[in-house]
Amino acid sequence: MTNLLPKDGVVHYFASAIPDPDAYFAALLRTIDWKNDEVSMFGKRIITKRKTAWYGDKPFDYTYSKIMRTALPWTTELLQLKAIVEKISSETYNSCLLNLYHDGSEGMGWHSDDEKEIVRHSAIASVSLGATRKFALKHKASKESVSLELQNGSLLVMKGETQESWLHAVPKSSKITEARINLTFRKMA
Image 1: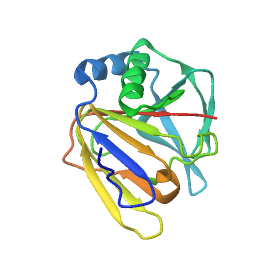
Image 2: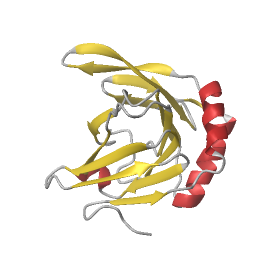
Image 3: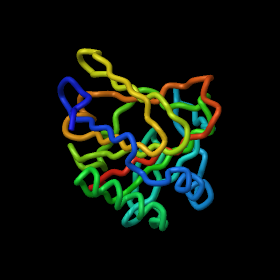
C-alpha cells in the first residue's frame, strides 16, 4: 500500500472500498438525523448549509468549532459501513462524524482532526458516497501539498502523525451539482 504523503504521516486510499455505494447513500440520506452545523467564526455563530450528524458506541461528547455534539446510537447502515472500514483498514473505531454536502458550493476549509477527545495518532477513516470531490492536504511547516479526487464508494485512511503535521480541506467547486456524504470514523478517548 502506497503512502500518499511524502513525510510526517500516513494516508492510504482505496478507490472502490464500499459495495453498492449508491444504496448506502440513499439509506443514509433517509435514516440519519441530519442537522445544520453551527460554527463560531470571528465571534459570530454561523449556521452552515452543510449538515452533520454524530454517532458512536456510547454518547461521546465531541467539541469542534466551539460546538458540542453528543453521539447518537449507531444505525444499521452505519454499523455495516463501520465493519467494512475496520476490515479494510485493520483498525477499530468507536464513533463517526457525518457531513452532507448538498453540492459544490459547500466545502470544508483547512483544518486538522486533532481535538483532544480523539485518541492521539489513531486512524481516521473517511468514506465518500455520492459526488466525486477534491481532497487536499497541506503540510503545516513546509507547505507541501497533496491532493486527490475522492470517488463514490472510496475510503481514505489517515493515521500516525497526519493530524499533527498536515491540514486537510474539501475545496468548494461550482462545477459540482450533486450531493456527497462523507463519513469519518474515529476513535474517541
